[in-house]
Length: 639
Image (cartoon, rainbow, N blue to C red; front, side, top):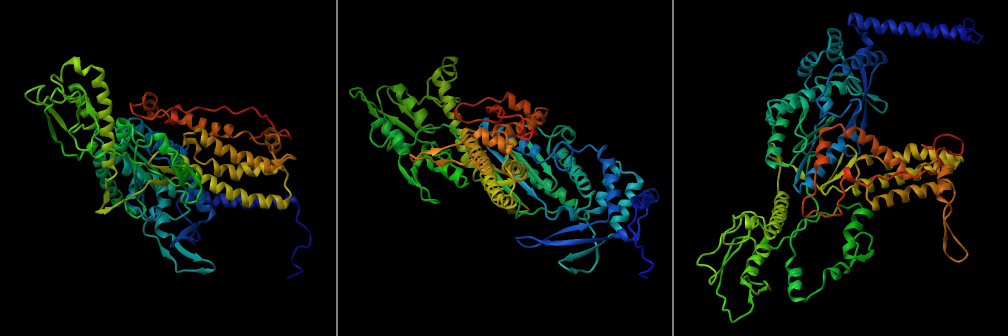
């Protein structure tokens, strides 16, 4: 046998002919399977590797044969070009992804915030979605979506005869037939799952949206309702809690008919507040304004406070921002309304007999320090400080005056234009509207949503599609998470590169490919503020100085000496942080500017009572990158 083996090295020509012969044989095998709708017996076995999860359970990854993957690629490429999915599906589609879904969720929440309305979000999670949908129902949908007879035959052969062999470490389990769902790691799996979700969503919209079925083709009313799906991760949002509860019930029932069960433990609800709204002074602050006794607001802000996490001492006004930016803890501050401003306050009627020998008369409400010098002052005082109560001054009229429905002021003729167009009525309307919004926020925070009678957990922040979303629309949670992960990546990567003796240019390439990808994930939907720019640039500049070995050092006089930052960036082949963020955001602007929600963003206007410091994504200040250097030191582009 040893003598029969060739002792010489095969020539390149023979190797080429043998490779070409193998490719031709493999191509004929694929063509035969496609033309005759037959598969070799060896292709009906799939090894499924079981990978344990950290929190228990396991995740299966199927290992399919190459021929079967090629056939699935052919089917997938031909069908994807013809099938038009619903607009709310963002997964496994060209020019769509997590960033497109995140920006629509971001703008939808900010539209509710600029209108000063509470938004209710439900994040949906389906248990083992890809492996549990009904094959029979899915097969009928494939036929309706235009799959040819050959495609359906090959899929049916795979579904009926495919044996799954579980494997963990070096041990194999007993083969079994999968009755439902698609084999994991199948190229057709995402396409088939999208078709199942698309059919459910279209039918759901014909039930829940009363517009003659138009939404089944064009999408929801983008300002009032929102539905997003990325694979098995879904989100539904609305400003109406009753509609959202009904929509959840119907959607869960329809997916259950398709074989998908909701995971109640992982399904969360978020109640988003419109942010800071100027309402009324607290009782203590109003008392100080009238009497002049007590600490001023500026003195209260400068009260000493200690961080419970790091024991750092600071002013009380800085504690919430410190907890959010340094420790990543979301701090939600609900409106604080005195008892007289709550919607649950029981209205009371007060009668005043004012002897005119007294120039001023005290407010009849217990604990109120106000004193009026004329009747009109009493009515204005009750409109602002006791809006649900009424007052009757006996020497003014026989009966109490009626309240204006717009502002709540008691006056003799509240419906005349002389009052409704007055400055007093306009200011009263603004105050009344802010008070009503604050009461709605407090009531909405107690809203409970259920699925099959099980209440859903309400959270203040949720990681949706890799991005941290918060009920206050703050992007500091996402930045904090990304920065913490990027630091760990940079720590592990820099140790390896230093050990290998990499130069600054190689450092910069790995930094952009690994660390910066983690740091700026989801930044397309961030509303950038000056403090966020400072945090990002600080990380970027420190990394550049370390790569270029140009760290700051102490001089002879004890002061710090900083070397040229531009030179450090040039050595590492990096641009400024503004350059990278602006390029990512400009790419998403090109997408979102073609969407219907963009027109609502352009037409949105701030409501009275909104903080002037609030910045929205569509009108945030765009920063242009500084032209550090178009090319690196070796002539290659720095990006």
